[in-house]
Length: 267
Image 1 (tube, rainbow, N blue to C red):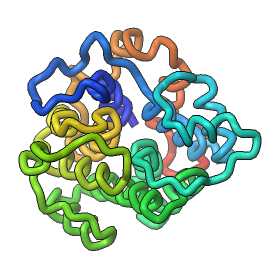
Image 2: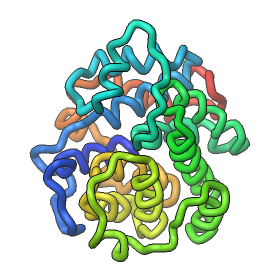
Image 3: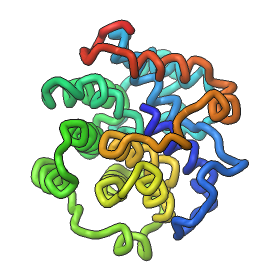
């Protein structure tokens, strides 16, 4: 989804240069697409075309080297016999939005099954699986037009996350964290408290944490809630500026948006 990709690009320059304010240039000169966008595109490809999950994810990441892959995942990308490694990193949640998008007019059980399929190949720790499911569930609920307050209650009840704090309450004590446990609840809050897509991404980046991943998780939820503002839509100019090295990413995203709402349907 463009929500994940735009969030990733906007947050990329703040991953190691963290800020605690919402007042920043949205697309700065150091912005670029990272592993979050690559993995999201790979998941879209897997689910659109019913491809084998592990080798397809590897192929995508090998075509886009040096995009900020974590250590264990980087090793997994290069192995000849990829197996899950018990991760509960936030990478489980940042790449899963296509599972919700493709099933937005279907049953939540189908969306969660799709999320499990693309998560268990690496992040098979219970917290990793939960983070991906909770993100998928929140996006799916937003597509149903469910109010943010009810989405919050549903996620808290189903997954045990504490979503009681506001963004302003989270921000002062929050620090960089790559786990689902301390990324997914905060990213969901950033989206559910937002007034627009851009506001959700600014919320996520302003926490001063793993900015690109927080924004890549909050972004698709906010996209489902609000849509994306016209001035941030992925125009040819934006693609030329940030995605000129990733025509395959642009292509599969276009296919995702034109696909029938059934996993495995070829657009």
